[in-house]
Image: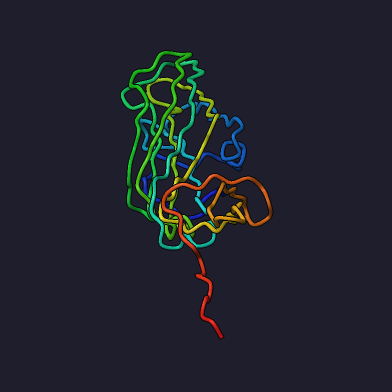
Length: 209
């Protein structure tokens, strides 16, 4: 994750939250300070917005994989004012197109805490392209000023269709040739439990010479 330099076109009601947002992306806390008035927005309300770009290198042999991306974060309304009609939202974008959104509770009271979560289908190419963006906007002025804390940010991608290489070692009965047992390890020797269909990467050449 990094702070996105590209706009997602939310409009002047949603000005950028000043400073780095890295603390949130790394799982720490990020404060949305209260705005004293609506001059930073449309003259009526202000929603400060943190936008981050998602960049991930899929594992080898996952280029054509598809799966699900899930993002969540906890938000706390610190006050001094209570929330109004639309208090905030967690959104996922592909370029400037919104994919999915989870809105915070409306008219939230001071001290309100909730976790916002979005989940959407993605491809390995999406993750590698840097074209996916997450946006968290929170209302910092509408009727009254209010501050928020966002924390416990998590992002996970579950890909299906990856061809993972591992070693399978067989124990064979010398008299009968029967396979007695087998063990699986990663290529560097760590225990591994395969999922899905298991196949042989490069079938041996058994042709007699």
